[in-house]
Length: 166
Image (cartoon, rainbow, N blue to C red; front, side):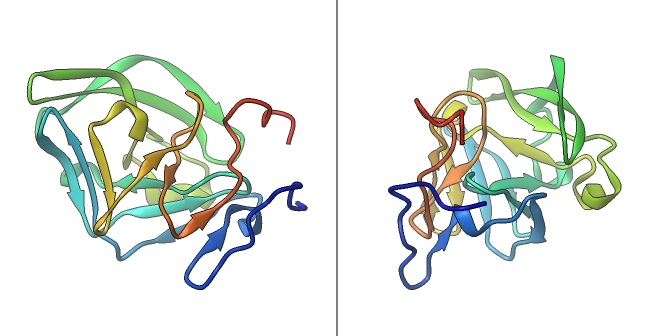
């Protein structure tokens, strides 16, 4: 896919989301991934998987056993990703807060994405904090996608106003 007008040229140590492939890349990440809600850590791992797809900041998938016991509750609804397959949603509860449909999982993903079966991805916009190493991630703009924006990833990113036609 070609880069859109206004795409940021990556600097040293940065990646452009326009260099990410379609279908998406799935890779393990050695970085520590942490998620906080209500002042409590709901996920903390160094065993996450990173999904990188053209025009999107990465999403991180955490092993369920690295999530706080009782923090994840099945939620209504489902969706289908053309690459990963059918997704189920989860409500996240911690520290007296309840974030409805704030996480998702692929119970039985397509063979290419089998390593993330049962892992959990979180919408940064619905959590108090999401961390990649020592860097606090910002949410991908818009309410549909769940990418984590950090300074080492440049866009523009799909999801904001006027980006649906890319």
